Length: 247
Length: 350
Image (cartoon, rainbow over all chains, first blue to last red; front, top):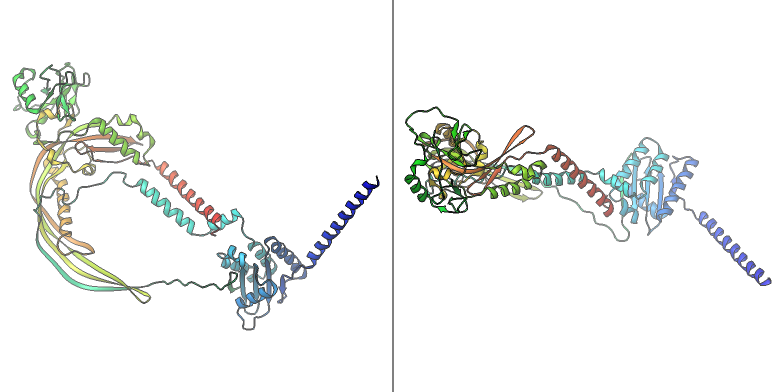
Protein backbone atom coordinates (compact mmCIF):
# COMPACT_ATOMS: atom_id res chain seq x y z
CA UNK A 1 0.00 0.00 0.00
CA UNK A 2 2.75 2.34 0.94
CA UNK A 3 4.50 1.48 -2.29
CA UNK A 4 1.44 2.37 -4.32
CA UNK A 5 1.06 5.66 -2.46
CA UNK A 6 4.66 6.57 -3.20
CA UNK A 7 4.33 5.81 -6.88
CA UNK A 8 1.14 7.83 -7.03
CA UNK A 9 2.83 10.77 -5.29
CA UNK A 10 5.70 10.52 -7.77
CA UNK A 11 3.30 10.65 -10.68
CA UNK A 12 1.39 13.55 -9.20
CA UNK A 13 4.58 15.56 -8.64
CA UNK A 14 5.70 14.86 -12.17
CA UNK A 15 2.30 15.90 -13.51
CA UNK A 16 2.28 19.12 -11.48
CA UNK A 17 5.80 20.06 -12.47
CA UNK A 18 5.15 19.45 -16.14
CA UNK A 19 1.90 21.44 -16.04
CA UNK A 20 3.69 24.30 -14.33
CA UNK A 21 6.52 24.17 -16.87
CA UNK A 22 4.18 24.23 -19.80
CA UNK A 23 2.23 27.08 -18.22
CA UNK A 24 5.31 29.20 -17.69
CA UNK A 25 6.48 28.52 -21.22
CA UNK A 26 3.13 29.73 -22.59
CA UNK A 27 3.38 32.82 -20.47
CA UNK A 28 6.92 33.27 -21.71
CA UNK A 29 5.78 32.94 -25.33
CA UNK A 30 3.02 35.46 -24.79
CA UNK A 31 5.44 37.86 -23.26
CA UNK A 32 7.80 37.54 -26.24
CA UNK A 33 5.14 38.87 -28.67
CA UNK A 34 6.78 41.20 -31.15
CA UNK A 35 5.43 44.59 -31.93
CA UNK A 36 4.07 44.39 -35.47
CA UNK A 37 2.12 47.62 -35.80
CA UNK A 38 4.25 50.79 -35.97
CA UNK A 39 1.80 53.63 -36.27
CA UNK A 40 4.00 56.71 -36.34
CA UNK A 41 1.45 58.65 -38.40
CA UNK A 42 -1.21 57.91 -35.76
CA UNK A 43 -3.86 56.63 -38.08
CA UNK A 44 -5.19 53.91 -35.81
CA UNK A 45 -6.92 54.00 -32.45
CA UNK A 46 -5.58 51.85 -29.62
CA UNK A 47 -8.27 49.24 -30.02
CA UNK A 48 -7.65 49.13 -33.75
CA UNK A 49 -3.93 48.67 -33.13
CA UNK A 50 -4.66 45.78 -30.76
CA UNK A 51 -6.92 43.98 -33.15
CA UNK A 52 -4.48 44.47 -36.01
CA UNK A 53 -1.59 43.29 -33.84
CA UNK A 54 -3.58 40.20 -32.90
CA UNK A 55 -4.36 39.44 -36.51
CA UNK A 56 -0.74 39.91 -37.61
CA UNK A 57 0.44 37.74 -34.72
CA UNK A 58 -1.91 35.02 -35.80
CA UNK A 59 -0.72 34.84 -39.39
CA UNK A 60 2.92 35.37 -38.34
CA UNK A 61 2.70 32.31 -36.15
CA UNK A 62 0.73 30.34 -38.69
CA UNK A 63 3.27 30.83 -41.48
CA UNK A 64 6.40 31.20 -39.35
CA UNK A 65 7.04 34.65 -40.79
CA UNK A 66 6.90 38.30 -39.75
CA UNK A 67 4.09 40.49 -40.96
CA UNK A 68 4.53 44.18 -40.23
CA UNK A 69 2.53 47.34 -40.75
CA UNK A 70 4.35 50.67 -40.64
CA UNK A 71 2.94 54.18 -41.08
CA UNK A 72 5.18 57.25 -41.40
CA UNK A 73 4.42 60.99 -41.30
CA UNK A 74 7.11 61.69 -43.88
CA UNK A 75 10.08 59.91 -45.37
CA UNK A 76 12.67 62.73 -45.45
CA UNK A 77 13.85 61.98 -48.94
CA UNK A 78 14.32 58.22 -48.55
CA UNK A 79 12.49 56.04 -51.08
CA UNK A 80 9.56 54.10 -49.66
CA UNK A 81 11.09 50.86 -50.93
CA UNK A 82 14.37 51.55 -49.12
CA UNK A 83 12.47 52.47 -45.96
CA UNK A 84 10.38 49.29 -46.14
CA UNK A 85 13.44 47.08 -46.57
CA UNK A 86 15.29 48.75 -43.70
CA UNK A 87 12.29 48.73 -41.42
CA UNK A 88 11.64 45.06 -42.02
CA UNK A 89 15.27 44.14 -41.27
CA UNK A 90 15.06 46.16 -38.07
CA UNK A 91 11.67 45.09 -36.75
CA UNK A 92 10.97 41.89 -38.57
CA UNK A 93 13.92 39.63 -39.16
CA UNK A 94 17.14 39.52 -41.17
CA UNK A 95 16.99 35.99 -42.57
CA UNK A 96 13.48 34.57 -42.44
CA UNK A 97 10.33 35.31 -44.32
CA UNK A 98 7.68 37.93 -44.02
CA UNK A 99 6.06 40.95 -45.52
CA UNK A 100 5.66 44.61 -44.74
CA UNK A 101 3.14 47.19 -45.79
CA UNK A 102 4.48 50.70 -45.35
CA UNK A 103 2.76 54.03 -46.02
CA UNK A 104 3.97 57.57 -45.72
CA UNK A 105 1.37 60.32 -45.36
CA UNK A 106 3.39 63.29 -46.63
CA UNK A 107 4.37 61.68 -49.92
CA UNK A 108 1.22 59.53 -50.06
CA UNK A 109 3.51 56.60 -50.84
CA UNK A 110 2.54 53.02 -50.24
CA UNK A 111 4.78 49.99 -50.44
CA UNK A 112 4.26 46.30 -50.10
CA UNK A 113 7.39 44.17 -49.86
CA UNK A 114 7.61 40.44 -49.27
CA UNK A 115 10.62 38.39 -48.22
CA UNK A 116 11.67 34.75 -48.42
CA UNK A 117 8.92 32.22 -48.84
CA UNK A 118 6.15 34.82 -48.59
CA UNK A 119 7.82 36.51 -51.56
CA UNK A 120 7.84 33.19 -53.45
CA UNK A 121 4.14 32.79 -52.78
CA UNK A 122 3.14 36.36 -53.61
CA UNK A 123 5.66 37.48 -56.21
CA UNK A 124 3.04 37.62 -58.97
CA UNK A 125 0.58 39.51 -56.79
CA UNK A 126 2.81 42.26 -55.36
CA UNK A 127 1.13 44.97 -57.42
CA UNK A 128 -2.35 43.53 -56.90
CA UNK A 129 -1.99 43.46 -53.12
CA UNK A 130 -0.37 46.91 -52.98
CA UNK A 131 -3.11 48.38 -55.15
CA UNK A 132 -5.96 46.75 -53.24
CA UNK A 133 -4.59 48.00 -49.89
CA UNK A 134 -3.91 51.39 -51.52
CA UNK A 135 -7.62 51.78 -52.30
CA UNK A 136 -8.45 51.55 -48.58
CA UNK A 137 -5.75 54.14 -47.80
CA UNK A 138 -7.18 56.54 -50.38
CA UNK A 139 -10.57 56.12 -48.74
CA UNK A 140 -8.92 56.85 -45.34
CA UNK A 141 -10.10 53.45 -44.07
CA UNK A 142 -6.73 52.65 -42.57
CA UNK A 143 -7.71 49.92 -40.14
CA UNK A 144 -9.82 48.11 -42.71
CA UNK A 145 -6.96 48.42 -45.20
CA UNK A 146 -4.40 46.88 -42.90
CA UNK A 147 -6.78 44.10 -41.92
CA UNK A 148 -7.29 43.54 -45.63
CA UNK A 149 -3.50 43.28 -45.99
CA UNK A 150 -3.43 40.61 -43.29
CA UNK A 151 -6.09 38.74 -45.20
CA UNK A 152 -4.51 39.16 -48.66
CA UNK A 153 -1.02 38.18 -47.66
CA UNK A 154 -2.20 34.80 -46.44
CA UNK A 155 -1.13 32.20 -49.01
CA UNK A 156 -4.25 31.35 -51.00
CA UNK A 157 -5.93 27.97 -50.70
CA UNK A 158 -6.47 25.75 -53.70
CA UNK A 159 -9.80 27.20 -54.75
CA UNK A 160 -8.65 30.77 -54.27
CA UNK A 161 -5.60 29.94 -56.38
CA UNK A 162 -7.90 28.71 -59.14
CA UNK A 163 -10.01 31.85 -58.75
CA UNK A 164 -6.90 34.03 -58.93
CA UNK A 165 -5.73 32.26 -62.11
CA UNK A 166 -9.23 32.64 -63.59
CA UNK A 167 -8.75 36.38 -63.15
CA UNK A 168 -5.77 36.39 -65.49
CA UNK A 169 -6.24 36.60 -69.25
CA UNK A 170 -3.71 33.87 -70.12
CA UNK A 171 -5.77 30.75 -69.31
CA UNK A 172 -8.78 32.19 -71.17
CA UNK A 173 -6.72 32.95 -74.22
CA UNK A 174 -4.98 29.58 -74.01
CA UNK A 175 -8.31 27.73 -73.78
CA UNK A 176 -9.74 29.82 -76.60
CA UNK A 177 -6.78 29.20 -78.91
CA UNK A 178 -6.66 25.47 -78.16
CA UNK A 179 -10.43 25.11 -78.67
CA UNK A 180 -10.24 27.04 -81.93
CA UNK A 181 -7.42 24.82 -83.18
CA UNK A 182 -9.10 21.53 -82.22
CA UNK A 183 -12.58 22.52 -83.43
CA UNK A 184 -11.12 24.07 -86.57
CA UNK A 185 -9.23 20.86 -87.27
CA UNK A 186 -12.33 18.73 -86.74
CA UNK A 187 -14.64 20.99 -88.71
CA UNK A 188 -12.15 21.59 -91.50
CA UNK A 189 -12.50 19.82 -94.82
CA UNK A 190 -16.16 19.15 -94.53
CA UNK A 191 -16.36 18.79 -98.29
CA UNK A 192 -13.09 17.38 -99.52
CA UNK A 193 -10.22 18.86 -101.41
CA UNK A 194 -10.12 20.30 -104.89
CA UNK A 195 -7.10 18.84 -106.64
CA UNK A 196 -7.68 20.31 -110.07
CA UNK A 197 -5.10 22.99 -110.79
CA UNK A 198 -4.20 25.20 -113.70
CA UNK A 199 -2.10 22.45 -115.26
CA UNK A 200 -4.56 19.53 -114.93
CA UNK A 201 -6.21 20.02 -118.31
CA UNK A 202 -3.47 22.07 -119.99
CA UNK A 203 -2.06 20.58 -123.17
CA UNK A 204 1.62 19.98 -122.33
CA UNK A 205 3.83 22.59 -123.92
CA UNK A 206 0.91 24.65 -125.19
CA UNK A 207 1.48 27.60 -122.88
CA UNK A 208 3.11 30.50 -124.61
CA UNK A 209 4.21 33.67 -122.84
CA UNK A 210 3.82 36.25 -125.57
CA UNK A 211 5.11 39.23 -123.64
CA UNK A 212 6.17 39.99 -120.12
CA UNK A 213 6.71 43.42 -118.61
CA UNK A 214 8.21 44.32 -115.25
CA UNK A 215 8.54 48.02 -114.51
CA UNK A 216 10.02 49.34 -111.27
CA UNK A 217 7.60 51.72 -109.55
CA UNK A 218 8.86 52.70 -106.12
CA UNK A 219 10.33 51.54 -102.84
CA UNK A 220 8.54 51.93 -99.53
CA UNK A 221 10.17 51.62 -96.14
CA UNK A 222 8.51 50.97 -92.80
CA UNK A 223 10.08 51.08 -89.36
CA UNK A 224 8.62 49.40 -86.32
CA UNK A 225 10.03 49.66 -82.85
CA UNK A 226 11.16 46.39 -81.30
CA UNK A 227 10.05 46.18 -77.70
CA UNK A 228 12.89 44.95 -75.56
CA UNK A 229 12.30 43.15 -72.30
CA UNK A 230 14.25 44.06 -69.23
CA UNK A 231 15.30 41.50 -66.66
CA UNK A 232 16.26 42.44 -63.16
CA UNK A 233 18.97 40.56 -61.37
CA UNK A 234 18.41 39.31 -57.86
CA UNK A 235 20.87 39.69 -55.00
CA UNK A 236 22.21 36.87 -52.89
CA UNK A 237 20.52 35.51 -49.77
CA UNK A 238 16.77 35.41 -49.50
CA UNK A 239 14.63 36.58 -52.32
CA UNK A 240 12.48 39.64 -51.88
CA UNK A 241 10.48 42.04 -53.94
CA UNK A 242 8.27 45.03 -53.45
CA UNK A 243 5.72 47.15 -55.15
CA UNK A 244 5.39 50.88 -54.54
CA UNK A 245 2.72 53.34 -55.54
CA UNK A 246 0.69 56.36 -54.50
CA UNK A 247 -2.60 56.32 -52.69
CA UNK B 1 -39.67 2.59 -127.67
CA UNK B 2 -36.91 0.05 -127.70
CA UNK B 3 -35.07 -1.33 -124.77
CA UNK B 4 -31.74 -3.00 -125.24
CA UNK B 5 -30.73 -6.00 -123.19
CA UNK B 6 -27.47 -7.92 -123.61
CA UNK B 7 -27.64 -11.65 -123.23
CA UNK B 8 -25.12 -14.29 -122.23
CA UNK B 9 -23.83 -16.22 -125.19
CA UNK B 10 -23.79 -19.46 -123.20
CA UNK B 11 -27.03 -19.49 -121.23
CA UNK B 12 -28.96 -16.50 -122.61
CA UNK B 13 -29.37 -14.81 -119.23
CA UNK B 14 -29.09 -11.01 -119.19
CA UNK B 15 -25.51 -9.84 -118.56
CA UNK B 16 -24.02 -6.72 -117.02
CA UNK B 17 -20.60 -5.07 -117.07
CA UNK B 18 -18.38 -6.38 -114.27
CA UNK B 19 -16.04 -3.83 -112.69
CA UNK B 20 -13.47 -6.24 -111.24
CA UNK B 21 -12.96 -8.09 -114.52
CA UNK B 22 -13.58 -5.02 -116.70
CA UNK B 23 -15.58 -7.48 -118.83
CA UNK B 24 -19.20 -8.53 -119.21
CA UNK B 25 -20.04 -11.38 -116.91
CA UNK B 26 -23.03 -13.67 -116.62
CA UNK B 27 -24.28 -13.96 -113.03
CA UNK B 28 -25.79 -17.34 -113.74
CA UNK B 29 -23.13 -19.37 -115.55
CA UNK B 30 -20.02 -17.25 -114.82
CA UNK B 31 -19.21 -16.88 -118.51
CA UNK B 32 -17.13 -13.82 -119.34
CA UNK B 33 -17.19 -11.87 -122.54
CA UNK B 34 -15.00 -9.15 -123.97
CA UNK B 35 -16.71 -6.22 -125.67
CA UNK B 36 -16.32 -7.50 -129.26
CA UNK B 37 -17.71 -10.89 -128.27
CA UNK B 38 -21.06 -9.57 -127.12
CA UNK B 39 -21.37 -7.29 -130.09
CA UNK B 40 -20.89 -10.26 -132.35
CA UNK B 41 -23.56 -12.18 -130.55
CA UNK B 42 -26.03 -9.37 -130.79
CA UNK B 43 -25.57 -9.20 -134.53
CA UNK B 44 -26.26 -12.91 -134.94
CA UNK B 45 -29.35 -12.93 -132.76
CA UNK B 46 -30.95 -9.67 -133.62
CA UNK B 47 -34.41 -11.16 -133.20
CA UNK B 48 -34.31 -10.39 -129.51
CA UNK B 49 -34.48 -6.69 -130.11
CA UNK B 50 -37.33 -4.63 -131.36
CA UNK B 51 -35.98 -2.42 -134.12
CA UNK B 52 -36.90 1.19 -133.67
CA UNK B 53 -37.10 3.73 -136.43
CA UNK B 54 -35.06 6.60 -135.08
CA UNK B 55 -35.88 8.91 -137.97
CA UNK B 56 -39.44 9.20 -136.73
CA UNK B 57 -39.72 11.97 -134.16
CA UNK B 58 -41.42 10.30 -131.25
CA UNK B 59 -42.52 12.04 -128.10
CA UNK B 60 -40.16 11.04 -125.27
CA UNK B 61 -42.01 8.30 -123.50
CA UNK B 62 -41.44 7.68 -119.86
CA UNK B 63 -42.61 4.11 -120.08
CA UNK B 64 -41.01 0.98 -121.45
CA UNK B 65 -41.72 -2.73 -121.46
CA UNK B 66 -39.20 -4.96 -119.72
CA UNK B 67 -37.84 -7.50 -122.15
CA UNK B 68 -37.45 -10.14 -119.47
CA UNK B 69 -40.74 -10.10 -117.58
CA UNK B 70 -42.90 -7.90 -119.75
CA UNK B 71 -43.74 -5.44 -116.99
CA UNK B 72 -44.41 -1.87 -117.97
CA UNK B 73 -41.85 0.33 -116.30
CA UNK B 74 -42.02 4.06 -115.80
CA UNK B 75 -38.62 5.74 -115.85
CA UNK B 76 -37.38 9.04 -114.52
CA UNK B 77 -37.27 11.80 -117.11
CA UNK B 78 -33.61 11.45 -118.06
CA UNK B 79 -32.90 7.82 -117.22
CA UNK B 80 -31.09 6.13 -120.10
CA UNK B 81 -30.01 2.92 -118.46
CA UNK B 82 -31.91 1.37 -115.63
CA UNK B 83 -33.23 -1.81 -114.03
CA UNK B 84 -36.64 -3.37 -114.17
CA UNK B 85 -38.07 -2.68 -110.75
CA UNK B 86 -39.78 -6.09 -110.75
CA UNK B 87 -37.13 -8.49 -111.97
CA UNK B 88 -33.93 -6.39 -111.62
CA UNK B 89 -33.21 -7.06 -115.29
CA UNK B 90 -30.73 -4.49 -116.60
CA UNK B 91 -32.12 -2.44 -119.47
CA UNK B 92 -30.65 0.22 -121.69
CA UNK B 93 -33.08 2.60 -123.35
CA UNK B 94 -31.51 2.92 -126.75
CA UNK B 95 -33.31 6.07 -127.92
CA UNK B 96 -31.86 7.97 -125.00
CA UNK B 97 -28.36 7.26 -126.30
CA UNK B 98 -29.04 7.99 -129.95
CA UNK B 99 -28.92 10.95 -132.25
CA UNK B 100 -27.79 14.06 -130.38
CA UNK B 101 -27.65 11.95 -127.23
CA UNK B 102 -25.10 9.53 -128.59
CA UNK B 103 -22.04 9.86 -126.36
CA UNK B 104 -18.61 9.99 -127.92
CA UNK B 105 -16.73 8.56 -124.94
CA UNK B 106 -17.21 6.48 -121.84
CA UNK B 107 -15.06 5.74 -118.82
CA UNK B 108 -16.15 2.37 -117.36
CA UNK B 109 -16.60 1.94 -113.61
CA UNK B 110 -13.49 0.86 -111.70
CA UNK B 111 -14.87 1.29 -108.17
CA UNK B 112 -17.37 -1.36 -107.06
CA UNK B 113 -20.53 -0.65 -105.09
CA UNK B 114 -18.94 -2.32 -102.07
CA UNK B 115 -15.82 -0.16 -102.30
CA UNK B 116 -18.01 2.90 -102.71
CA UNK B 117 -19.85 2.05 -99.48
CA UNK B 118 -16.57 1.59 -97.65
CA UNK B 119 -15.32 4.89 -99.02
CA UNK B 120 -18.43 6.61 -97.72
CA UNK B 121 -17.93 5.13 -94.25
CA UNK B 122 -14.30 6.16 -94.09
CA UNK B 123 -15.28 9.62 -95.21
CA UNK B 124 -18.22 10.19 -92.87
CA UNK B 125 -16.30 8.86 -89.87
CA UNK B 126 -13.73 11.59 -90.34
CA UNK B 127 -16.51 14.18 -90.31
CA UNK B 128 -16.64 14.71 -86.59
CA UNK B 129 -19.57 17.11 -86.58
CA UNK B 130 -21.77 15.05 -88.90
CA UNK B 131 -25.00 13.92 -87.23
CA UNK B 132 -24.68 10.40 -85.85
CA UNK B 133 -27.60 9.05 -87.91
CA UNK B 134 -25.52 9.50 -91.07
CA UNK B 135 -22.85 7.21 -89.76
CA UNK B 136 -25.11 4.15 -89.83
CA UNK B 137 -25.08 1.28 -92.28
CA UNK B 138 -28.70 1.92 -93.24
CA UNK B 139 -27.85 5.26 -94.75
CA UNK B 140 -25.18 3.94 -97.10
CA UNK B 141 -27.55 1.53 -98.88
CA UNK B 142 -28.92 4.47 -100.81
CA UNK B 143 -25.63 5.00 -102.61
CA UNK B 144 -26.03 4.40 -106.34
CA UNK B 145 -23.67 4.05 -109.26
CA UNK B 146 -24.51 6.30 -112.15
CA UNK B 147 -23.12 7.10 -115.58
CA UNK B 148 -23.34 10.86 -115.49
CA UNK B 149 -23.63 12.88 -118.70
CA UNK B 150 -20.54 15.03 -119.16
CA UNK B 151 -19.30 17.54 -121.69
CA UNK B 152 -15.55 17.37 -122.29
CA UNK B 153 -14.31 20.66 -123.69
CA UNK B 154 -11.18 21.34 -125.73
CA UNK B 155 -10.36 25.02 -126.03
CA UNK B 156 -7.73 27.71 -126.34
CA UNK B 157 -7.43 30.63 -123.95
CA UNK B 158 -5.47 33.81 -124.56
CA UNK B 159 -5.23 37.17 -122.84
CA UNK B 160 -3.35 39.27 -120.34
CA UNK B 161 -3.11 40.03 -116.66
CA UNK B 162 -1.63 43.14 -115.07
CA UNK B 163 -1.05 44.29 -111.54
CA UNK B 164 1.58 44.88 -108.94
CA UNK B 165 4.41 42.65 -107.78
CA UNK B 166 6.17 43.22 -104.49
CA UNK B 167 9.46 42.05 -103.03
CA UNK B 168 10.40 43.00 -99.51
CA UNK B 169 13.30 42.46 -97.22
CA UNK B 170 13.54 43.19 -93.56
CA UNK B 171 16.39 43.79 -91.16
CA UNK B 172 17.08 45.07 -87.68
CA UNK B 173 18.61 48.46 -87.14
CA UNK B 174 19.12 49.37 -83.49
CA UNK B 175 15.75 49.22 -81.76
CA UNK B 176 13.87 49.20 -85.06
CA UNK B 177 12.79 46.60 -87.57
CA UNK B 178 13.12 48.11 -91.02
CA UNK B 179 11.08 46.65 -93.90
CA UNK B 180 11.84 47.79 -97.40
CA UNK B 181 9.36 46.90 -100.15
CA UNK B 182 9.99 47.31 -103.86
CA UNK B 183 6.90 47.71 -106.04
CA UNK B 184 6.78 46.72 -109.70
CA UNK B 185 4.16 47.10 -112.38
CA UNK B 186 3.75 43.72 -114.05
CA UNK B 187 1.98 42.64 -117.21
CA UNK B 188 1.88 39.16 -118.75
CA UNK B 189 0.40 38.28 -122.11
CA UNK B 190 0.06 34.66 -123.13
CA UNK B 191 -2.03 31.81 -124.38
CA UNK B 192 -2.52 28.15 -123.70
CA UNK B 193 -4.59 25.20 -124.83
CA UNK B 194 -6.72 22.93 -122.68
CA UNK B 195 -8.25 19.59 -123.40
CA UNK B 196 -11.19 17.70 -121.98
CA UNK B 197 -12.22 20.10 -119.25
CA UNK B 198 -15.21 18.20 -117.86
CA UNK B 199 -18.55 19.87 -117.13
CA UNK B 200 -21.49 17.75 -116.04
CA UNK B 201 -24.57 17.88 -118.24
CA UNK B 202 -27.11 17.23 -115.55
CA UNK B 203 -29.14 19.84 -113.72
CA UNK B 204 -29.52 17.54 -110.76
CA UNK B 205 -25.76 17.32 -110.15
CA UNK B 206 -24.37 20.51 -108.56
CA UNK B 207 -21.40 21.83 -110.59
CA UNK B 208 -19.35 22.90 -107.58
CA UNK B 209 -19.49 19.38 -106.18
CA UNK B 210 -18.68 17.75 -109.50
CA UNK B 211 -15.44 19.72 -109.63
CA UNK B 212 -14.45 18.09 -106.35
CA UNK B 213 -14.28 14.57 -107.77
CA UNK B 214 -12.15 15.64 -110.72
CA UNK B 215 -9.85 14.76 -112.32
CA UNK B 216 -10.88 11.63 -114.19
CA UNK B 217 -8.00 9.64 -115.59
CA UNK B 218 -8.40 9.97 -119.36
CA UNK B 219 -6.20 6.96 -119.98
CA UNK B 220 -9.34 4.96 -119.16
CA UNK B 221 -11.37 6.87 -121.76
CA UNK B 222 -13.00 4.55 -124.32
CA UNK B 223 -15.20 5.03 -127.33
CA UNK B 224 -18.79 4.83 -126.22
CA UNK B 225 -20.66 1.59 -126.55
CA UNK B 226 -24.13 0.81 -125.18
CA UNK B 227 -22.84 -2.40 -123.64
CA UNK B 228 -21.05 -0.46 -120.87
CA UNK B 229 -24.35 0.92 -119.66
CA UNK B 230 -25.82 -2.52 -119.00
CA UNK B 231 -26.19 -3.05 -115.28
CA UNK B 232 -25.97 0.61 -114.30
CA UNK B 233 -28.08 3.64 -114.06
CA UNK B 234 -27.38 6.28 -116.65
CA UNK B 235 -28.80 9.66 -117.49
CA UNK B 236 -28.91 11.67 -120.66
CA UNK B 237 -27.91 15.31 -120.53
CA UNK B 238 -30.39 18.07 -119.80
CA UNK B 239 -27.79 20.85 -119.88
CA UNK B 240 -26.77 21.40 -123.48
CA UNK B 241 -23.34 22.12 -124.90
CA UNK B 242 -23.80 25.90 -124.93
CA UNK B 243 -24.98 26.11 -121.35
CA UNK B 244 -22.17 23.83 -120.20
CA UNK B 245 -19.68 25.95 -122.12
CA UNK B 246 -20.66 28.93 -119.98
CA UNK B 247 -19.63 26.92 -116.93
CA UNK B 248 -16.37 25.83 -118.55
CA UNK B 249 -15.14 29.24 -119.76
CA UNK B 250 -14.52 30.84 -116.36
CA UNK B 251 -12.56 27.74 -115.40
CA UNK B 252 -10.32 28.00 -118.46
CA UNK B 253 -9.87 31.72 -117.74
CA UNK B 254 -8.85 30.95 -114.19
CA UNK B 255 -6.38 28.31 -115.37
CA UNK B 256 -4.63 30.73 -117.72
CA UNK B 257 -4.68 33.54 -115.14
CA UNK B 258 -2.93 31.29 -112.63
CA UNK B 259 -0.39 30.14 -115.20
CA UNK B 260 0.34 33.73 -116.25
CA UNK B 261 0.75 34.76 -112.61
CA UNK B 262 3.38 32.10 -112.15
CA UNK B 263 5.26 32.95 -115.33
CA UNK B 264 8.10 35.39 -115.94
CA UNK B 265 9.84 37.22 -113.13
CA UNK B 266 8.84 35.90 -109.70
CA UNK B 267 7.62 38.09 -106.82
CA UNK B 268 6.96 37.47 -103.14
CA UNK B 269 3.43 38.76 -103.53
CA UNK B 270 1.35 39.72 -106.52
CA UNK B 271 -1.95 41.63 -106.74
CA UNK B 272 -3.79 41.43 -110.05
CA UNK B 273 -5.64 44.65 -110.80
CA UNK B 274 -7.03 43.80 -114.22
CA UNK B 275 -7.14 40.90 -116.64
CA UNK B 276 -8.85 39.95 -119.85
CA UNK B 277 -8.85 36.39 -121.12
CA UNK B 278 -10.69 35.09 -124.16
CA UNK B 279 -11.67 31.49 -124.59
CA UNK B 280 -12.02 30.32 -128.18
CA UNK B 281 -11.83 27.27 -130.48
CA UNK B 282 -14.23 25.49 -128.17
CA UNK B 283 -14.98 21.89 -129.06
CA UNK B 284 -17.18 19.67 -126.95
CA UNK B 285 -17.48 15.90 -126.75
CA UNK B 286 -20.33 14.15 -124.98
CA UNK B 287 -19.22 11.45 -122.55
CA UNK B 288 -20.56 9.12 -119.90
CA UNK B 289 -18.44 9.23 -116.76
CA UNK B 290 -18.91 6.95 -113.76
CA UNK B 291 -19.91 8.38 -110.37
CA UNK B 292 -21.52 7.20 -107.16
CA UNK B 293 -24.06 9.53 -105.61
CA UNK B 294 -25.55 9.56 -102.13
CA UNK B 295 -28.05 12.20 -101.13
CA UNK B 296 -28.73 12.78 -97.46
CA UNK B 297 -31.65 14.85 -96.31
CA UNK B 298 -31.04 16.50 -92.95
CA UNK B 299 -33.50 18.95 -91.46
CA UNK B 300 -35.10 19.56 -94.83
CA UNK B 301 -31.81 20.30 -96.57
CA UNK B 302 -30.21 18.08 -99.20
CA UNK B 303 -26.56 17.10 -98.87
CA UNK B 304 -24.93 15.35 -101.78
CA UNK B 305 -21.93 13.08 -101.51
CA UNK B 306 -20.15 11.99 -104.68
CA UNK B 307 -17.43 9.43 -105.44
CA UNK B 308 -15.48 9.34 -108.66
CA UNK B 309 -16.40 5.88 -110.01
CA UNK B 310 -13.04 5.58 -111.71
CA UNK B 311 -10.47 7.00 -109.25
CA UNK B 312 -12.41 6.79 -105.98
CA UNK B 313 -11.90 10.48 -105.18
CA UNK B 314 -14.63 11.80 -102.90
CA UNK B 315 -16.29 15.14 -102.44
CA UNK B 316 -19.46 16.19 -100.79
CA UNK B 317 -21.47 18.12 -98.33
CA UNK B 318 -21.86 16.70 -94.87
CA UNK B 319 -24.83 17.57 -92.78
CA UNK B 320 -23.47 19.65 -89.92
CA UNK B 321 -24.93 19.04 -86.50
CA UNK B 322 -24.95 22.54 -84.98
CA UNK B 323 -26.00 21.34 -81.55
CA UNK B 324 -23.15 18.84 -81.48
CA UNK B 325 -20.77 21.58 -82.60
CA UNK B 326 -21.86 24.10 -79.97
CA UNK B 327 -21.87 21.57 -77.13
CA UNK B 328 -18.49 20.17 -78.10
CA UNK B 329 -16.93 23.63 -78.47
CA UNK B 330 -18.26 24.83 -75.12
CA UNK B 331 -17.27 21.60 -73.41
CA UNK B 332 -13.77 21.67 -74.81
CA UNK B 333 -13.32 25.34 -73.95
CA UNK B 334 -14.42 24.92 -70.34
CA UNK B 335 -12.42 21.73 -69.88
CA UNK B 336 -9.26 23.30 -71.26
CA UNK B 337 -9.82 26.36 -69.11
CA UNK B 338 -10.40 24.37 -65.93
CA UNK B 339 -7.44 22.09 -66.60
CA UNK B 340 -5.24 25.13 -67.21
CA UNK B 341 -6.46 26.93 -64.09
CA UNK B 342 -6.23 23.94 -61.75
CA UNK B 343 -2.94 22.88 -63.31
CA UNK B 344 -1.64 26.38 -62.69
CA UNK B 345 -2.83 26.25 -59.09
CA UNK B 346 -1.19 22.86 -58.51
CA UNK B 347 2.09 23.96 -60.07
CA UNK B 348 1.96 27.19 -58.09
CA UNK B 349 1.79 29.51 -61.11
CA UNK B 350 -0.61 32.21 -60.06
